[in-house]
Image 1: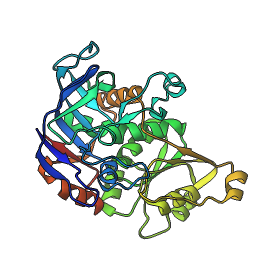
Image 2: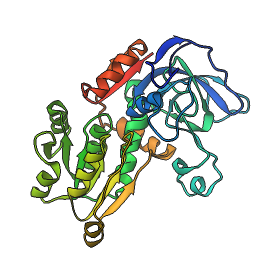
Image 3: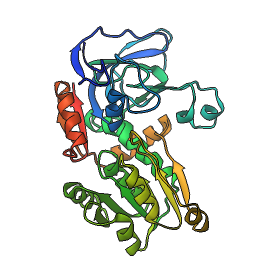
Image 4: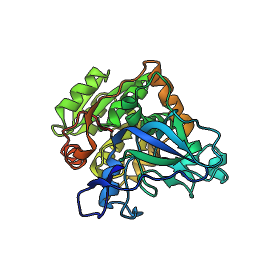
Length: 336
């Protein structure tokens, strides 16, 4: 099969032929139709984070395709069924986190395109119970970004406990941010979109943002405070400075939701203001399989739209360069 492979953290990905994997017990083989490019894939390919993947490996955790083969003992999936391969490749199902509905915190989890080979390939293997069915009302092209960008931002809005008529500031209107904006609006919030690119702010307006702020032209925290401050600030830009701006945009009782993972990210929070103003700082990892099912249901009902451009897998390195240069409206999806 053709696959985009990370062979070295300092080298471009290589698109080449590698053996098609065989599903083991409890696994299914998926013929990939579409696979989204997430910033996490770029971090993985560069070995940016403290816990690094081991080359050679195939990135990709926004894969959608058809089940082509069942491993021994699989009864939960059927051949021909369309499924998504998300970041959470598997979890133990037995620890306190899994039992409590927080499988994304499982310490034994495997992650698609990171600790196990992912979906930048014509075929991928995934645990059957973690291959999430994609409903007929959602195209494979749309389902790919929803499998990470969608479920991650849906979860961020959910853990922030956004209430109707609250103000939510979205820092970073990209693959994640354009969906976070929509989930905040579904929750009934007023939305302020922050970015450094005018074309992304125009996209935010089209998607229903009440206000937009260009952080390259003015301090977004000051601009948001002039509007009355935010009840929730969702940090989606891979920039430590953006996280601190998001914190300072909050009004009393506000919640900072940390989502993006800058390669070398730290933030400094003033203890006095955090305590006296009752500010909460929340780390939000990707959503569960149930959350992804909700994301698909909302999209199938016409409540969200995915903004993405199509690329071929052979263009993977050029696509990464586009993302890093901020040239992509929201998401890139490889169609295989």
